[in-house]
Length: 228
Image (cartoon, rainbow, N blue to C red; front, side, top):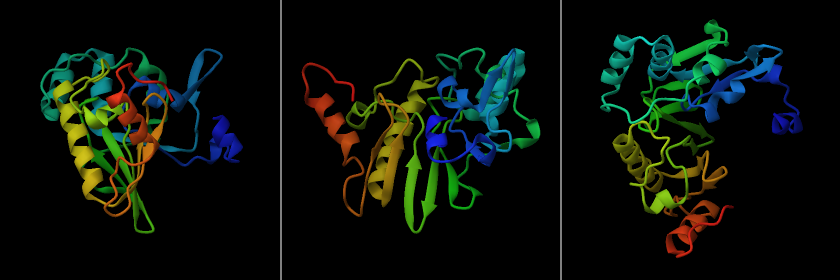
């Protein structure tokens, strides 16, 4: 919020919020606590999120076994090793104006001019990376496909927060290949341990830049990774 204010943007001026997935560290700013009630942080914004992610969260909150299993069957990822943290959906999604929550199918369709949601399920049931195309260049906001630069070299590593580990591994390998094969100008990861980006121009590796430098340091170091 401080960065938005520094950029001269008031919460009321934000007209769209794009969610990669519904985990607490990615939706926690959707709402704010006013006395005892959670209210939308961006009252005029449309929230764009995967319909499967949304209805899975709704079923979990309601404890609807059939709805939960139907969502998992639709995802086709098998049984999860964990579920999203309790309270997240209730605090950060349900208080939103339902009419302003746009639930989409993650199928690479253009949801807004120049913006597409790419399927990278695994970390969550229908995790999406968000692709932005502008002036002929492409940026991908990966969400939690990668959690740390080391996963560039070791994509089979899985965090304890990944709900479907096998699918998460596939997503990392797929996105890594995509970034290398396409002229991706920016590839941004949400964590690792703080937001990091990688650049790619033409045949330049998508893992060039500070993100990759830290990854190589971690890969080669016998003393572990330093936090940058």
